[in-house]
Amino acid sequence: MSNHVRVRYAPSPTGHLHIGGARTALFDYLIARHAGGQFIIRFEDTDQTRHVETGIDNQLEGLKWLGVDWDESVDVGGPYAPYRQMDRLELYQPYVQRLLQEANAYYCYCSEQDLETERAEQEAKGETPSYSGKCRALSADQIEFYRVEGRKPTVRFRVAENRVISFTDRIRDHVEFESNGIGDFIIVRPDGIPTYNFAVILDDHLMDITLVIRGEEHLSNTPRQILLYEALGFEIPEFAHLSLILNQDRKKMSKRDESIMQFVEQYREQGYLPEAVLNFIVLLGWSPGGEEEIFTKEQLIEQFSMDRLSKSPAVFDTEKLKWMNNQYMKKADPAIVAELAIPHLQKAGLLSNELNDETRTWAHELVALYQEQLNYAAEIVELTSLFFKDELEYDEEANLELSGDHVPIVLDSFRRQVEAAHTYTPEAIGAMLKSVQAETGFKGKQLFMSIRIALTGQMHGRDLNRTLYLLGKENVLNRIKTRA
Image (tube, rainbow, N blue to C red; front, side, top):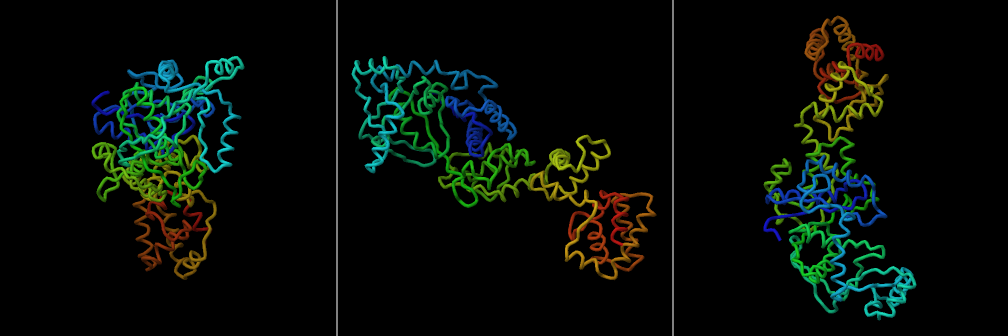
């Protein structure tokens, strides 16, 4: 085994990149880059019933969007290719035969119906269902009988009784299991395809993986895998089992839980910045050790360490993600934010799909006006709705503010200023407002609040001069006349 770090992310290509999978991949990536090691992506696609044709591309595209790169995989190749289990089936066969020859595994001819009957009987007795081992010592005649009958056997691993299987987890410290609670488990299905627990240890060994990082749900698989490592005489890698990710109600996040967007692609579609999503995901179970929470990828690579990974579940706080993304939005290049936001205005039918130069410039300025408020780009539709309304609606409080005797005077003075203006820019609008103040004697709230509410329908908003400029001279005059 190599002396340096080799880690892998090994998803099943069953769909889009899940937040939990993204976290595992990010931790692998940061550890590899911090240590100057290798980060490998391979695909565990032996369960063909769950295979999604676009699953591999979706996984890789999601990671690329987050800013993650890798050293070996299906797209870049590498010295341990191939990187899909279905392309590696021939590599597994010698190890199956070796386990059979050394009596560490055996053929099992039990049908699904046999196993279901056995499970039902055990449950009826109040026992924990497990395989009884009825095929452990079949005679040659029995095996021949089943073969002639046409039964397709599975291959089961022979688990030693009364053993304690222990290991040191990089996150959970000492962990141990009793072999009696495991039962002889299947390592090869009737179709000849290895199961997860068998294929994964062969791939990790053959690809020289030194550290296996995965979710807590895999903890119960570890004793089975250690038994296989031992039976084959392989060096056992280190293990690190990450804490669960809980939803905001502190319940285990289910893929059917609609209270949280659980796939990286959803955040991309909503207009989150990838560097913010990466930053947020890394903090799901890892503590930087100080008060700072905003990190560049380079800072994370420099600071990331296994000893700050938590055993406690991580809570996926959607509001915190919005806050974090807003911090990145504020500092982002306005052109980047505009390109994220404009498609949402187009999808909502507020902008044409084909923008001329004038409209595109206006749209960029509109997004820039609200950039500091955006938690994510899709919010631009609601934030800018006042610019796309034919008629404004005023709530009770707004109508009360517009009921003062000073309002018609202020609006009439401003209308005349706008009509007479040769230049209509934010700076020119600022000068107009000063002229209204000088002419009417009204200032402060009586001046600015009256104009803002009458022309936007809102009591509070962004910079008034820029807002009125983006509304456009004709629109402003029409709204004043409508209110008069």
